[in-house]
Length: 240
Image 1 (cartoon, rainbow, N blue to C red):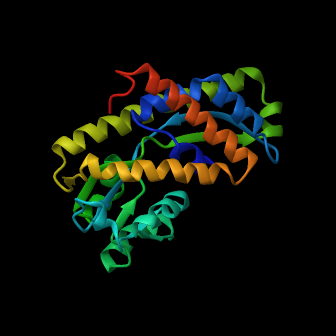
Image 2 (image 1 turned 135 degrees about the vertical axis):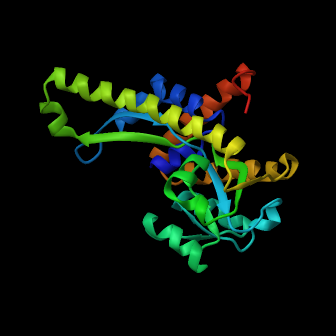
Image 3 (image 1 turned 90 degrees about the vertical axis):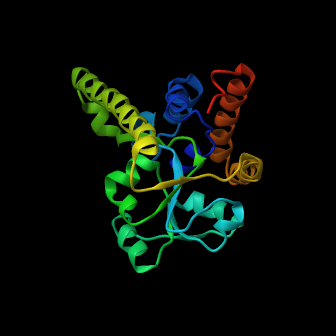
């Protein structure tokens, strides 16, 4: 469900995601999803989803046949461009690149690549992103949360909000600094006039996802409504 949410978001990355999580429509929808005794507390934008690979990528044709560690929704979407999604434990991805089982990852931004060691086993970072920002949520046991005194709930929420701020600064400070000054990954880009094919394919993909359930329809429509507002608002919201 979280994957469905974040994939429909566009850039400008964490700033937009922070706005999204504060809007009444998304908050109300999240509260509505109290399923199986679980309560949603809060969410925040995190890093984008880019490619880091052994092979140089400068065109869509270069994606064909790439074996990439990625999350299921992205794998389903990218397969139409010839990507071969590989599902393995997170901690095995680095070794899988070294052994040739993987050609790289489509999982995170450049900050995580450097932090967890993926930049040590891959050579290139594609600046084109397939997700503007992950939206990471906090969930708790519904009954335990209901039983918690209000002053302790306030402390938990304060810690969560502080964590949102920290992650936004950590991720996005790293995205800028490591792209500009990092010495492990060479930056590459697919020209925008070619990448637009991916953006158009995404519109059809999310229409397909939305049709799968009433819940999916509500989630995807929430992001479409938000993106429509941003598009009509124009700069600076449409920068990036």
